[in-house]
Image 1: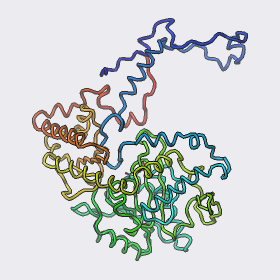
Image 2 (image 1 turned 30 degrees about the horizontal axis):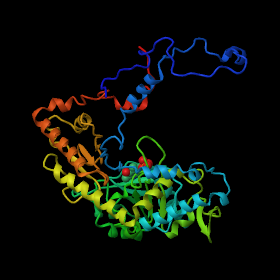
Image 3 (image 1 turned 60 degrees about the vertical axis):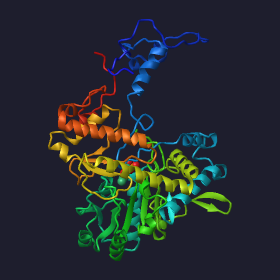
Image 4 (image 1 turned 90 degrees about the vertical axis):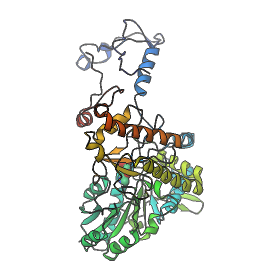
Length: 486
Ligand SMILES: *Cc1c(COP(=O)(O)O)cnc(C)c1O
């Protein structure tokens, strides 16, 4: 594979070379200007490259090889669960009966699809310990907002209008305070203790008559299990608030512990993380929301119900918060998640959790001598290192992340959670082999040694990629997506 970008799309152009052959006209020939009024016609023809089909093929294949995905290399991006997406999921969601359905087909002719969605809801109820589930939300953050709207509808239906605040720990994922704000709430941040767990005293100090909900994830964003969750649930419930569980990353507890049993009232899941929907390229997600019985009346309409032997869409939900997405959510991702759950089975899902946790602890212990480990206790599916030791040597966490690119690894999540200085958040997932985990640890250790012996090589990384350090803000806000001929 060539490393330097050798654009051949224009430079390789040779006059008269063609990548297509069209059949002869079987109608009278005409000129475009006879058909299209001149004011709509381009004045100058665009200068397009002339290439053979093979050269075009190579151009685009070379570009596609510059991408990094789970199918091309290790992707330990913390809080994102970049696990393998089994190809059987793709085969199932492409079956004619699923792929060619029209959402406006009558219920009688979509029974198979409705059955699948209903059964998926049933599985997710079992996995989360909730009483009902909606599959409508399109992603995690959308699920958070939907769940908070259920809580809002619940309080309002009781005439309880003084609850204006949602409590969020300082380690939370950024979408939590954002969703609370969009749902019309004020966010109150509570502190974490030295050991990385929520400070119960600080929680008590902030819970009150104005608390709508406590929003939490367990294990928390540091990968640590909140052991006092039952006490926290009691504190919030006694004050009349609800508990919201951010279940985007269920890899740590799936089939072992259930949010519903920990005292949570609402949960969202990311089917495009734990349940193997492909993600990371901006494709569709799915963020189902589960709730306890007292919130069911407010679920988005329609709800898929089983009526005798058949399935139907129940629109008769007068207290519903309404639709949050057209049709039934992102159907294809739901089919993939269902396929995954059925192909793993309950024991398989339990094994997923065990391996996800084992892999994270293995790597954490291998790396802890070489990087600071701010929270030295068993982690769940991910762990957070700190690059502060390397920072003293002039090598920042960003440099370490860039250096990893030279070895073909996607870097871990960095500078997150915000409460860890120079944070490096690693989530290996259960689908990686021990050899892959060791390969990555070896390189991390090599980089830690380079930071001591040869910091410039890390500071100036990456050395082998097509583009070096980008202005990430500019790249996101003003991307140059078109080839500009020099
Ligand atoms: C990924 C993630 C989210 C957001 O999910 P999206 O599908 O990207 O909207 C929320 N919370 C946590 C903890 C996450 O890891």
